[in-house]
Picture 1 (cartoon, helix red, strand yellow):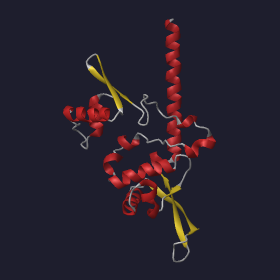
Picture 2 (cartoon, one colour; picture 1 turned 60 degrees about the vertical axis):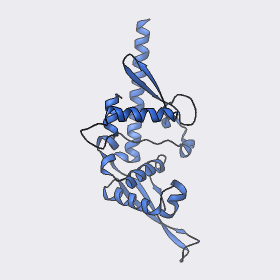
Picture 3 (tube, helix red, strand yellow; picture 1 turned 135 degrees about the vertical axis):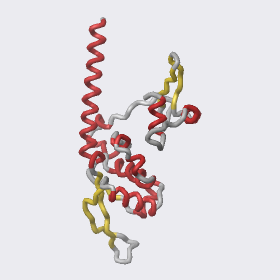
Picture 4 (tube, helix red, strand yellow; picture 1 turned 135 degrees about the horizontal axis):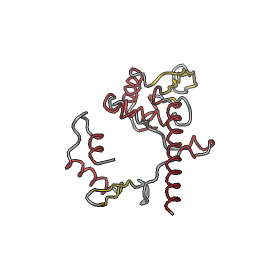
Amino acid sequence: MAGSGVGKALSVSDTDPLPVPAMSRIWARLEDHGLIDRSRVWKRTLVRPRDESTTRPYTRPRPDTVPEKEKPHESYFILPSAYWTERWHTKLDLPARALLLIMLHGTSSKNETYLPYEKAESWYGISAKTTQRGIDQLLKMELLKVTRRERVVADFSATGHATRTYYALTGPFSRAAREKLQTSSASESAARAAAARAAAGSAE
């Protein structure tokens, strides 16, 4: 993506991208943290991401190649492009954006997930109040729905039981929509690779 495109994506304005000096400071900070490599190609700056836990160049995760039995342990999830194209990054408050990412992770290998408010801080580092606000907005925006409620044993409850609420994402963020997007992306990648091999073969 061109620098102007990145500047527009990071801006809170629909029309005004971040200015060049601001983008330069962002790139410099990312480079200082070892998250990117920058180099000059002709008169343009080439930015390549790096793996955040090693010094190796970043490689795109391929959850579609993970064996089915290992998918519950897969730590990556898909964020559909609709998050930006439908402006959800501006429509949702910060708690809802955080909960959307959590729900995307929680449903990466199953259709529904649950998140007790009181467990949110120990599981994800966010408060129960923030969790409730995020879930409430996702429900209001119809990006999330309640699929079922389950009565479970709760030792610290006065009644000895508690209600566990399960949620599923909807629309472009549903698991079905993400799997369809993933399949389409894999097919496009395979087609591009085949075209590149064919072009290389004809050039020999």
